Length: 117
Image (cartoon, rainbow, N blue to C red; front, top):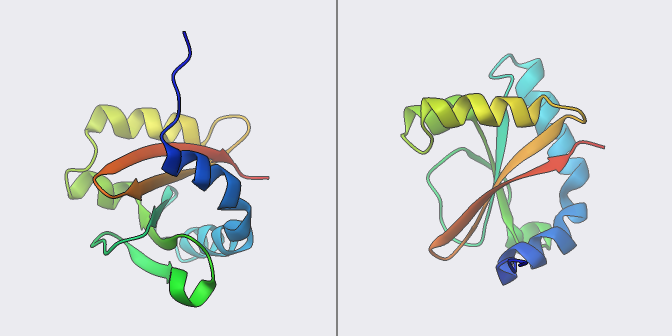
């Protein structure tokens, strides 16, 4: 039995390449400033109150606005549990290392991991 991805995830996977350079720069910035070892990108089309906006879809010319946050902020705000924190850290630092992305569309959201290549 196969499960079908929600349409917003299909659209996301098609357009994420548009954001790769931006993601790399923000990721390196968070690490270089010693903010966190675990940046999290939030892709959204509506207002969110987590993280700092690094791309406005109306200005950037994409389908998604992007905020960068941290796994620590997600935990502090109660968006993930301590058990989820450990699992997310393993997925981010695994082989190959990955970006952690929260993709929000309307009332739906999914945490996905994308290879950092």
